[in-house]
Length: 311
Image (cartoon, rainbow, N blue to C red; front, side):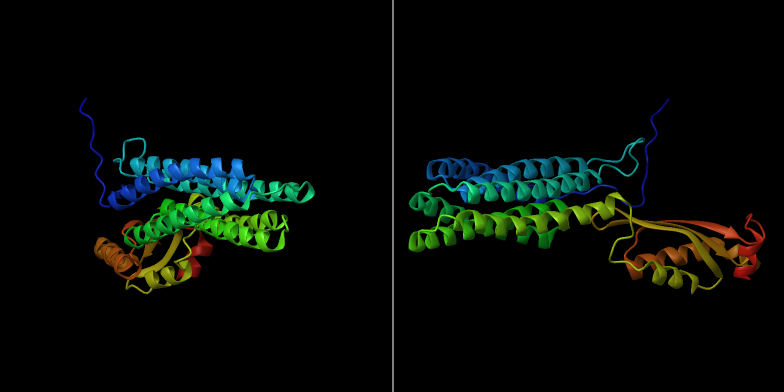
């Protein structure tokens, strides 16, 4: 038996060449500096550098996961995965956000332990490594911000938050070195680490929240369901809209399904009305993947209470 080819009006895949090249470049730079920062943190005995090196290691893992997500997002839908593999990038983003939260909590713990059991810090080496890290993270942040402007990708967004956290950590380390040098107060190192951890925690929360909305198939925050339903009902011959569902498969890839009750006196125009609704949803709200089911009060088995409500 010949294999059936599944045709879709809307392409359930993403070709993200710019995001892919951006992630590759970011991965190579990050991997190199992770090693540099880890060695520097061990030699200088700096918690800020060590915590940032582990954060950078999570960046390497996050970028690798994002690369896998882009690979799957570009694969065609199959008979079993009719929406394609777009949702994989949301799973990757969720894991990246979770990694940020775990890392920030680890930094909090280590900072508290360092406050309880203080250790001397080699400020000279700490400053050199932190300065290099600052330059690297500025470059990476700019690269990712430019990529995000050309292609909206939740994995690029999560990677950007990783590097913003790294950038702030580098600034914090430099500030810590200067303050430790002039004041001799070693506790500045863990205190600044805790402040940076709070920023990382906030970024991780935002990534998890955005991914959670998509994974739970909640209505995307950019849409108002009541407004969309009212717009649909305003179309001539449409009596009511119910069984309304609006969700996102991945970022900026939305789907809508609904039952549309039409006036039975104009049954010949049913498909024309549905086509009109689809054009309206596409032009006004950018909803290209819509599935609308026609219902008639006199044909479909709607209960009497609903019948009276509509009529």
